[in-house]
Length: 341
Image 1 (cartoon, rainbow, N blue to C red):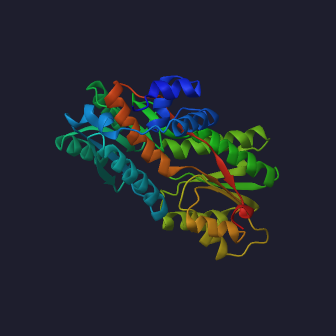
Image 2: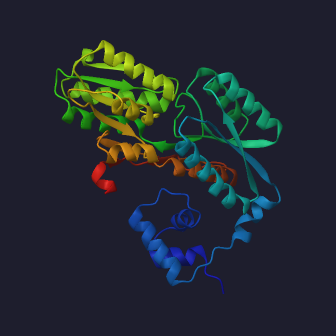
Image 3: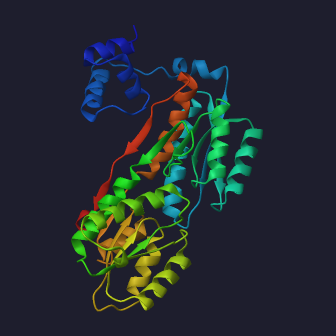
């Protein structure tokens, strides 16, 4: 006789819903509770019946789309694609296929055209990483009004009525970076801030959190200068050259988004009386190398893979339940060179 979720729940001392979230990897379960459930599953020899779980979907197959703008960082793009790939394999058991649409720019028109094209192909749900622009927000609202789930990941579009968001608390991660930088740089010394693409909520939220911490620690607005990398290597390198030619006494660089490699190359190829401190985001291989060489001081990481992966699983839940969990806020991890020795 097969073990039921109710039996596992009773054994673990939790609700059936909690067991279901653990079995179907839907998150929102405390680590210690999840461990207790997994021990119960093992003790009772529970076997997940994928055929039965997918039966409700098989009669009405659905197509969803994962859409995002590619960047100059191959590592970043690869992590997003790996999350999509793994979710695609899992969702196949539930009669859900996954299409991928990659945008080359942050232009609202390109995103909207691709959304419309996907809908023509029968897409009925989106996991999307897009800039926070009025036209895109309006498009998302129109999809949601048609009962189509839309989940934002990595960078939120909070002014829209998207179903939910999966990603890091971006303002908090910026505050963490600002707190670190304020402990390295003295009042009176200057800081350069690389913002990425201002239309992306993720980039601006991090910068806002970073600046909040600087102000909290007594820094004045004239002590920092913001530039936009546009997530482009050449733009970033050129902007840093121009700023360092115009300004003196720069002791800190904050890269709220890639390309960190351009910042590292600039610092290695120029001489400084005092080497600037660098705090940046995301553990791409080249970023880790600059950290190990002492060019960068700290990396604040996020789980990019989980963001794309989990957002697609939430679409499955939205189809099954008519709604889904409120999303998933992933934590902040801080690394220095000692972490990679």
